[in-house]
Length: 289
Length: 233
Image (cartoon, rainbow over all chains, first blue to last red; front, side):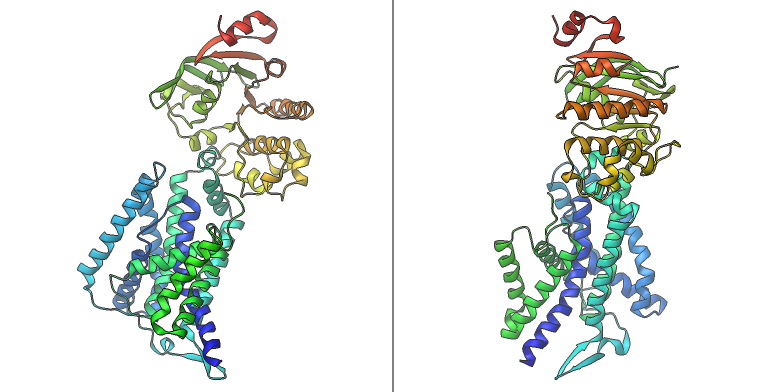
């Protein structure tokens, strides 16, 4: 019994990580209908960025991430402004092709620069610290922080989207691109800002990716897959849905692993297929469109 | 100098030419109406002024300044707001948010605030927290006009604001436009309803297949002239 309860708790915590992977993707799709195939590689890129900042400045990753966030915001803003904006609006294929190409470029540049060696973000004792819950169950501090960060990120994104003028502009642009321009909204700038914000979320996801496990330049595409599954399970356009989607995916994986360790990844994909079959629009789809 | 002037205005959708050399002018505090059959280019005319379709810089002059090649987001900041055909409110924003977004990045000073819009259309205040798809057609049209007013326009472009509405609601909306005009705002109406257009406008222009076929004051135009300008002869 303890084993199953443990699997449930660990599954929810793992779901926090997947929700962080997915939140940035959800934001990009929500504002500009951009399907970003380089999302996973961007998370890995951000993890290397934190690694470099932490190494060069001798900082703890939790501090290094604060330095990395503004840098990645600027990179995201520039990437959208200079490259991705040019791909939007014509058809669905061009952003897919461009971000697919970007994915390959990022993987190879990282491989060239950092080699294929596994890396890790080191933060001392906190990495292995855990809080005993009694009954032989303990939760790791880092997984707990991951889930709490995911909740904080989603709260903050909701606050930005539903309580600020820029969030209003995000939603209006997502609703009707043409009329948004009639309101004086510079859509290129709105898209770039959304991408910058998405890169902030990516950087936070990268912190926990690097603290929880090893990473190397090749692991991006699998993170993209988990992020996609979480977004689709949760329903497009809802941040809380994305959190729920991450948790469903995390639970499915830990429960699958509990049955047989080989089933971990497969169980996640199966849960995704089941949700897709039963509720094709996800668990918490947005009311319109 | 007129407030707004179009000079040999042309517009294209790809290879298809929708407007051929349209010359019009609009004075301060004046209302003009554009009438014409479906496909005559009336909506295209408004979209071109609003910057959704871009053309030659000097084909649209605002206060003597060429604005024909500017993007829509810049045009609205210069004081030209479009109430688009079909209202096109933002469905995921509440009524109040729709009004607030109308004032996004506004550069023009002027009288329009949330409170002023609510006193013009009191029903919107009652419905301010509602999602716009739950509004009636008339309420949606009021919200769309209010949203455009929030940018403090010098020129308000109205595309088919009476379409699909009950006559009593249309009367309310046109009465509100009179108040808007009294604030010193100039209005360009695109109207299917000729009677309504003649009543509200100081001058009318009739379009036929992308060309100007008639212009004049409503009282100077005969029924026959309008009929010919509308359908060709």
